Length: 224
Image (cartoon, rainbow, N blue to C red; front, side, top):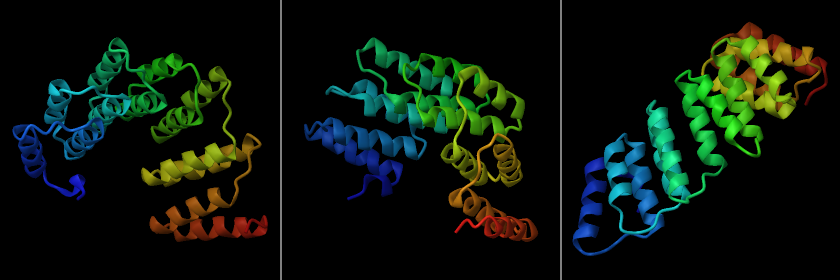
């Protein structure tokens, strides 16, 4: 069955019965349990499972707790688990860092987010995209440009499309339209994915005139 479909007290009951019967969950089952509690906001119970487990845990276990805390705006506490991982010899991966960077961006703590970026030995595309799109979401356009210049990272059409998609999902359709114009000024031209993402979002926002104008631009440029 799918544990994620159960309500918190049912999951708790199953877990308690497992322990009472002397059945110790393996790390996979433990991770599923922790994820289930994090998903429904039962963070303290999820953390207690991590603290009281009788088996070794892995990076996924910690990443799950970090994700749960960040989802509920507790990025500072989540960072404590990253430090704990390192102390216990469990190496954080890109998911660990990206989750935390996203978590700090969500609460507007860009200083901590950038500090984490500096800790990563190999910056990946997702990391840059999270930061840049978060700047755009908060109208911090100048900060976004400053970050790109200082990091030497200049988005390509795939990255811009990803940022536009994120802005649209956050309901920032106007900001996404602004970014579309700015990417062209930077010499990066939108493709089919860029256009269709924004056109679809404009229609959903009932901005029909802008949607049709953008679609017309797409047709004129011969983008299928």
